[in-house]
Image 1 (cartoon, rainbow, N blue to C red):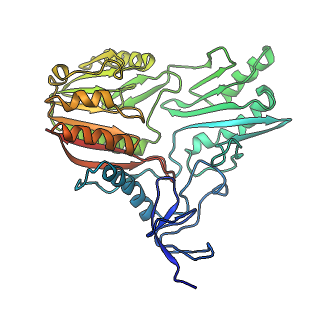
Image 2: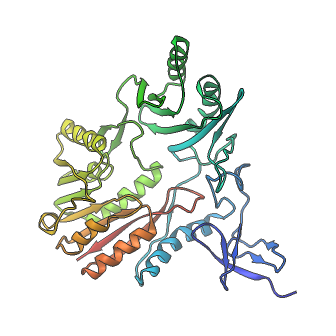
Image 3: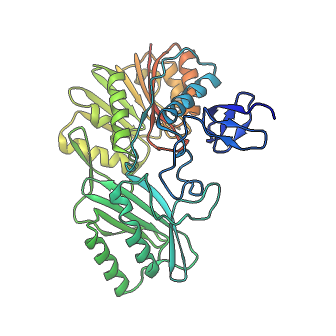
Length: 399
C-alpha cells in the first residue's frame, strides 16, 4: 500500500485537499487519506458539538479544531486575493465568533399531519433537518424552536413550507412567520397569547399578501455607538455581536481621524452611527426602509449624519463627490460594488474601509482599486458564520 496522502488545506466548499489536488469530504489539514478512502485523523480534528452535524446544512466544519478553523477563514481571504494576483498583503489572524452567538437566522418549517419539522435544510437538499439542538444559535433563539413548532401545528398549511425568521433585538426576539394561515378569532388570540407569553419584541406573519405586525409593545431597536435605531422588520444586521464589534473596530482603525466620512451601502447605520462621534458622516443606502430608520435615528440624536436614499449600483458616487471625504466606508452586498469601485479607483479619496461578506468579489474590487493607485494596507478576516464556509472581512486601502 502506498503512503497515505496528507491533507494540506480546506477548499472553499469545506472539503479537505491533498497536495496533488485530491478533494476529500470531511478531510482536515493534518489528516491522511489512504488509497481506500479511509481518513487517518490528524491533530487538527475535533469532535462535532452537534448531533445533526453531517446532515444539517447549517455547519460544514464542526469537525475542524479552532486553530485550523481560524486558518481556514484567513486562507479564504488570501486565496481570493491570490486568484486576482494580489499578493504580499498583510492578512491578519482571523477573528471567530463563539458558539451559541448567532443572533439572526432563517429556518424552514414543514407540517406533516400533526408533526412539524423546523430547522436548516440538509446539505445540498430541500429536506429539513428537524432541529433538536443547535450550537450556533443564541440560547434565546433556540428556546423558541419548540414553542414555534407547537404553534405551527395550528397555523401551518400541510406540506407548505413556512419561513421562520428569528432575530435578537434590544427588547428581545423578533419572530416573523412567512407562509402561514391564521384565520378567525381563535387563531388571532392564540398568536397574541404566544407573543405575550414569550415576551417577543416583535411578532409578524405573512399569509401571502404582505407582512402584518401582530405584536410590537414598543418600537424594537438596535444600538450603534450610543444611538438607538428603530429597525424595520428583519432588518439586515450583522449575525453576531462579536463579529459586529470586530468589523466596527477594524473600520474605526482604518478611517483614523478623518473629519468627514462617507458610508456607502449604509444599511440601518451599523458603521455610520458607530463612527459619527466628533465628525460629519454622509450615509447612502438603496433600501428605503433601512435609510428611513437611519435618518430617524440620526435626527433624534441630533447627530451630524446626512442621509440619502440612493441606488449605488445605478448611481454611484463619482470622483467629484468622493473627493470631499477624508475616508470612505464601503459595505456592499455579496456581489461587491463594481460600479462604485470604478469611481473610487478614479477618485482621490485618501482612505477606503471596505467591509465584505465575499472574499471573491472583494478580491476583484481590490484589484480594481490597486490598479487605480490604491495600496491595500491590511485585511482583517472575520468568521461570523462559525463552522461554515462563509467568510467576512474588513480591509484598509490608502492613496
